[in-house]
Image 1 (tube, rainbow, N blue to C red):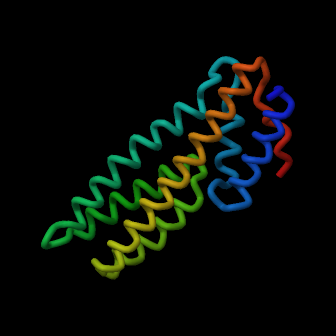
Image 2: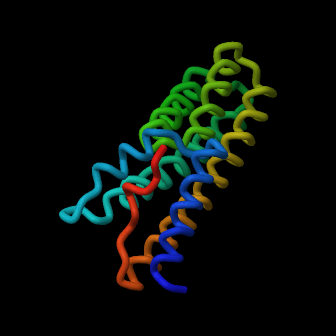
Length: 154
């Protein structure tokens, strides 16, 4: 596949992530911080998000599995996950966390467990989508092209 075609594929794929609500404008701001001096900035920040999220999801699973659920602890984990997902623009994860926090306030264990499954599902989806996006970027760069940041036009 030639570079121009890969770049068009990247633009279409990226637009779909915004249209489907996986990403929001914060992700665009993150991309704008990337430059020639730090070409892997977005991948590095998102990789940290993946590591943090997986740790927090394990902590949440453990906390909700206790006989006496500490809802303050659960809420603190959800709050942290909401903040990190918001900082990279993972909109659907952030929105699932907002609903989750409401059930923490109500101390509703069953609803919290359902929300945890929803957050895990949204996290897995956005992780797969971003990994695909980064693979497309690697293919473009390997073919001698550059990532078409300015062509998104939102």
